Image 1 (cartoon, rainbow, N blue to C red):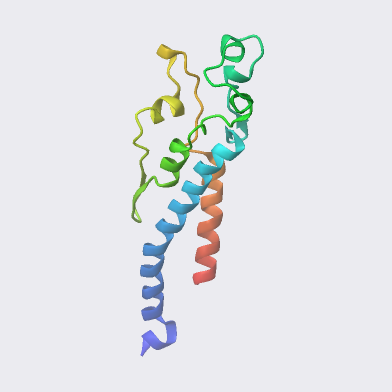
Image 2 (cartoon, rainbow, N blue to C red; image 1 turned 90 degrees about the vertical axis):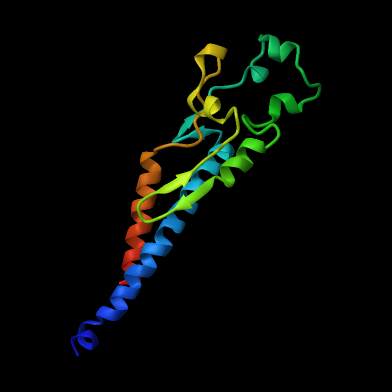
Length: 148
């Protein structure tokens, strides 16, 4: 009879449901946050370094590979959209212990971390973020409060 008074059966089911649903919710929130970097053209409030094709006086500005105005107005890292699509499909696994996200394009790591060997500045779009951690904490708090 104590199960009826304290609802341990329902509590157990709610915990199991949370253990299954919460990693999916957090993984989707992280993925959306990472994709939003492409829209914001920056990471955690810091704008990405400007590309040379937009800076007057550089050879890329003066002698463009592509003709037309789009070379100067197109967003950074979104010429074809391939990297952004890879980030938006990056969730590989989500368990209660960990969420695994992978972008397996050959140039993805060089763009995210920068590469001094080829003079490529860092334009981070994925990684640990205090803003994302705060968003996760709030999502977990709201989920737990709603469930219990």
